[in-house]
Length: 197
Image 1 (cartoon, one colour):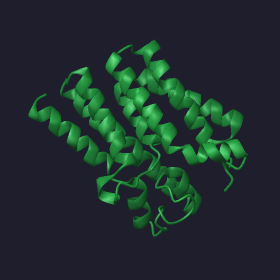
Image 2 (tube, one colour):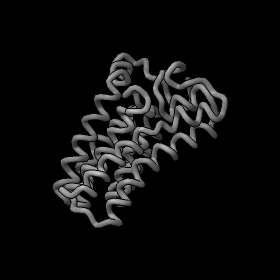
Image 3 (tube, helix red, strand yellow):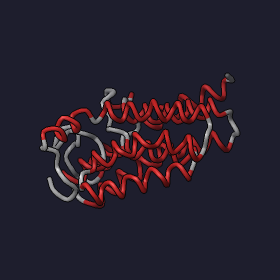
Image 4 (cartoon, one colour):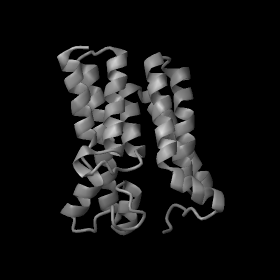
């Protein structure tokens, strides 16, 4: 692995570590999302404690920090393994940000950005899965979990690159792990529905 490739992986992690939720809330005069609502620095919690505009900015910011590093890697024509490592580094940066005490969000928007950078077909399939599940169940976390589980399969069917499939499978496992509190609420029937606190 070259110095440039290592630098790209490190930079992807650092970019992923920039919390769109915390920065947006600070700039818009809203409470720190780590101290209010679900205490998760992500778009859903920003919507809960703030407003739609703040949530949209957070969502877009988290999405971009997954997409941009992967697009840079593609532009520089790095090998699939390096691109997969760049993608995972950006995702891990969001989950465990060095700038915010390694306490990050759950990674759904950043994961979508990463996936779009790797394959627009897989990203579209994952997004459609989330939208359909959200329409049917009206539960954001459940929709994200269903999409996460199916994304490696979509990659295998649509973009059969081994390195991407393995990376997406690991990413899906991490998404499930980060949603463990939501899973407990789903099992108990206490998980909130979309549009309700």
